[in-house]
Image 1 (cartoon, helix red, strand yellow):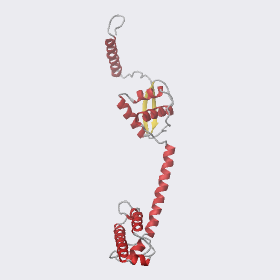
Image 2 (cartoon, helix red, strand yellow; image 1 turned 90 degrees about the vertical axis):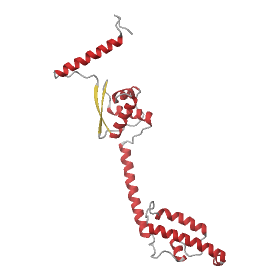
Image 3 (cartoon, helix red, strand yellow; image 1 turned 30 degrees about the vertical axis):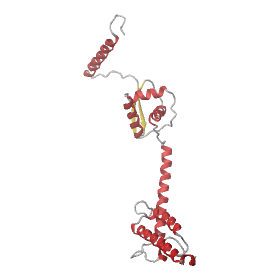
Image 4 (tube, one colour; image 1 turned 45 degrees about the vertical axis):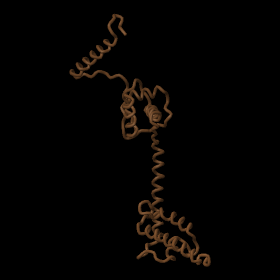
Length: 231
């Protein structure tokens, strides 16, 4: 494209940029700053929100102000306002905008781009309260389980009656192999040393001993005929 006088427009643009740069340099050398276009908005927001906005702008090849301007052009954001926070996002926009509207527009842009969601501060506080309550209840439950849990026998389990009692059976004739296996699967997650609420290696070891002893007892008694007679 050419200007009316036949001079190439791109050359004019380059020449005007060079001229502006020289003017800026001259004013800077004189200690005078030129007015900057646009209105500066210092948006208070959560740090994670600011990081996500800057990351999205970088991936789009623009600055955060351009991203915010484009998001505002699309209208009111559909995402909730993330609210003020411990970080500040400086944006220079053409006109004055409500900070809440800017945050909502940017949150909508993030959601559209990455499925990004930020829990509002009020909801986050409510969830934190529920989490603290659950942690307290878990500790109380673990304490109760510790009080009622069996104490490992010195020397290990050797008596079927002791093994049956550990599994909660009233005697050594009121269960079959399936019930032993089911009860073991119920108790193992409680006493497992790595994942159990009252994890203990000694208890887990004796739980395994009890299972093996009871299964052996059932199979031996069944083959000998005692099982049918006692039941």
